[in-house]
Image (cartoon, rainbow, N blue to C red):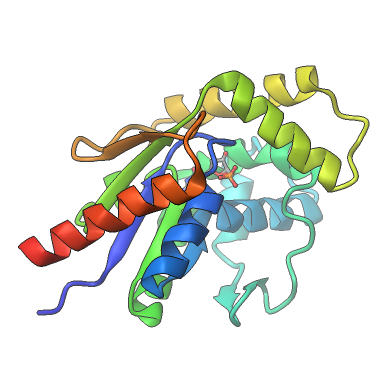
Amino acid sequence: MTVLPVIAIDGPSGVGKSTLARAVAARLGLTQIDTGALYRAATRAVLSADIDPTDTAAVAQLIGQVQFSYEPDLLLDGADPGDLRAPEVNAAVSYVAAVPSVRERLVDVMRRRAVELGGTVMEGRDIGTVVFPDAIVKVYLEADDDVRVQRRLADEHQAGRRHLDSHAVRSGLGERDRIDSTREVAPLSVPSDALRLDSTTASVDDLAERVVAAFRDAAEGS
Ligand code: DC
């Protein structure tokens, strides 16, 4: 049996998971999968259908009928899902991501996509704990709160949302962290065998090299 090369990168918002995943994927010739985008696309579907994101039964019913595909970008019912980083998506996504049947559905999409790609660098909240508990390397990425806020604020300003200030970004991040870490199904947690990295001051290149080294060590040992 050949082992699917999967590198799992978990951690809270704004720690630089996407940047690190992209750098590692480029070094290893793998494709990155941003699993937050799936929960964000599901949230877009909920908002477009005018469903209250906290109405668990209605959210579960809707998401059971929506199609998620990659061609190669993520499509929702065959179409571009729209702005996945819009403020209304940020405010609702943690509620949608806490619905157990939504998670079941999207975990299935993630696993199928990883197999289709022949391996992946997958980033999210529960990749090393639930989606791929046998991942070759599991990373848990952290950063100081002030740095996380500044990075997210820079992203928002870059996207043209210049009215947002650090206070608004800090409270949004704090609220999402709270819901993501306390939900009943697959809460954000550190996998017991994770390589813990901190991106507060380290460069992306240094972090990516450490992950690649861990991957090569694990691959040689297996
Ligand atoms: O990484 P992100 O900010 O794009 O994630 C958006 C939301 O989706 C966030 O509330 C956490 C949730 N999420 C999750 O529950 N599990 C994942 N594997 C990825 C994201």
